[in-house]
Length: 58
Length: 466
Image (spheres, each protein chain N blue to C red):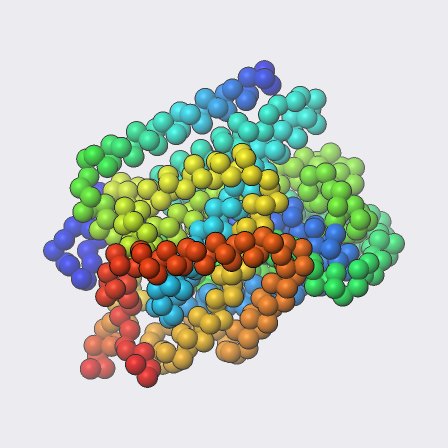
């Protein structure tokens, strides 16, 4: 049983990496590159507040 | 699919990282990456400076990291972007510094991750050996990495929720061991009065111990990488980072107290078979504590690896998004909202380092990269306060006594560089050469692809004197 554990670990790892590779290729094929790269550096309530206070000062 | 709308182009459909994390996730990220250093690695500081030398290193380096946590809490809660110190450097110093800081962070987490999964695999092998079975460690190293990569790929909330649970369990094992050695009765189990024997190598040994004293806290700065994914950066980042630092100070003090009260310094420093806390549990003779500390050690290695995948990928992703690296790396998964290309790109590199490079080399590269990152922070802090003085922008957290923490951090970084040079001078110089070559590549080749006006995203007023 203990000898089989190593083989099982390799098999499970291979299955996980295969699923990751499959999902990776599906996503890259089905989604436009423009959308995948559309993320912009953080915009949140802290900045929004700063932005509005800055506008308020002008 | 949920989409976010940016103020820059309201009509365009955009996807970004999910803002789903709270202070507990930030705590789990910070403590999770670091806690493995309490279970193993810090004991080499005992080999350099003796038990008391390691205690001095524990608190001196604790002061270094407290300064790091305070500075990070102020700057990151204001520059709340993936990439952490990379994004800070971009805004406060300039592109070349930012590129280097991004590389420092990526290599810190990449190498630490390789060390973590290597150790996790070897722990399974050692556990099997204790039960009388000899099995290889490599398949388990790869299995842990595959499982954690899958977790990170599928979403940050689940990743850091899991990290919270296993980190809390690992920390609890340290507390239970502490209770198990009856600290209220110092002579019942613990033998500090016989085992503490002064400074075997004098004060130069204490300075040398600073190098491995970093193990107690290495990686706490990784909390900044969650900046773009926390719901409230101004609250969650300072709260999560400072509570993580307090947790680590407690864990480090308990670790030293228990291990140095049960085993002679020569054994802790040079001959520990697996990890000093596990060996401490074996010294108590309690089967429950032995099993508990074995599980705690394994969980700490897994939690650290999990956090390192998260942080390394975000640093790489942030540099890709700004075109400091090919923009291809700046992609976000449309369903899971994770930097999936960066996660998958870094995984094979971790596998190669874990399977083929000696642990000591991997860890030295990680420590040196981290130390270079900490040396940047005082300069970052000075620039941040000088260019945008108090009251000119909204800060999530104002750290007190500036510039004292920045000066303290710089002095302690210089002392630690000297300590590293004493033991690993060649590696230090080789690594500096690597970063100089990388800087030349960036300055003379890569920077032409960067859209310079797009890098500075904070809606701040013009810096003072500009």
